[in-house]
Length: 473
Image 1 (tube, rainbow, N blue to C red):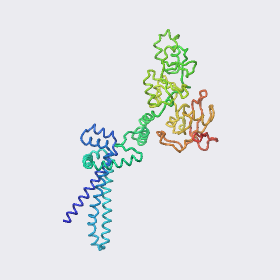
Image 2: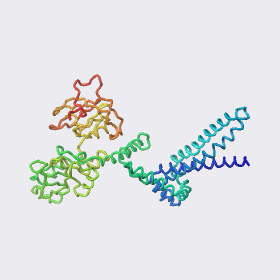
Image 3: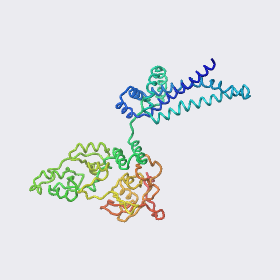
Image 4: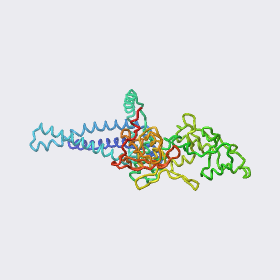
């Protein structure tokens, strides 16, 4: 009789350990699953288990409370059964070895406690946890039936415990939720793309395209626009023939029509296609104001996604960007938006050089209007935050004056404090390098071309440039 009780207790111990494993596997598989994965499984299979998993994931708080209740019950009963049973197994051999009664009892209890706890932890928790994380969907499907039955039987207890826990959480100022948020922020997706690219899961071109697309919404009209100093315009007294000649000379198809060369006094915008609506014999006498069309005006702070919608809604595919003082800051075209995602898009009519051209194998020839974030993507130089948006603006800030050709300045390094999460990481970071900028070409008072090279430490320029992060507030 005693032997039968011993065997039954051992069988009960194993069964309860498997029960603990069931609840642990269900808990970890549900928390590891993404909503999109479950939806795809429902669409593909559409069976009862798929629907059970979907229902359980939508009531995650209740299901996790049920799993915790099941783990607690099975663990307590396992300890109650296993320790005396195992102690009864170990005690006779110890007594036969000549160990005293008291020592044999204490030693057998300690051995029983260690072995029972170890087996329960390994078989009942660690193994099912690792399986659930590695094969989340398969484990969730396997445990969905038993978990649904257990939750239905003990619903009253689960609701009571879960309600009490939620009451305490609300008193702490946090609103409980029934399911995990499956959405990812753009920053999380960017980090995922970059990690995938570094590990070879995504090729470099695909990773760059996705990275630019995700960062597009964070840019503003001011970041995306063509600044006013580089815009070719037509005067209101110019003719359609002047429009044709300007398009042939510049390669541009759209031109703002202004009064006396002042972009703040904008009449409208003309497209080269409109020139063909005027008979050739009348082009020399027809003013462009007669075919000019008004275009949307947007604030410089408008984000990239909203800006794209505004441009797509207008037939001219162009918006005028207005600064905070009401003046014209620049224009944005569909091509500007496409190039922000795909990179430079050129055709046979484009005469512009690339914004960044490698030179000497270790340096770059950069456009002065290159944005600071684009500068890092292209060269690895991470500029500190400051009152500038472009490479030319950074050089002017460091010099403290309008530059001239052949001016040289060592650019400040980014402070390590606050550096990292918000910055792009696609190229190899080179924050340990001091970058030397040489003004190669000016366009009036604007820096047009800059030669950027790493400066050897022994050749550092004597005066440190102003550092934006140390500027007086």
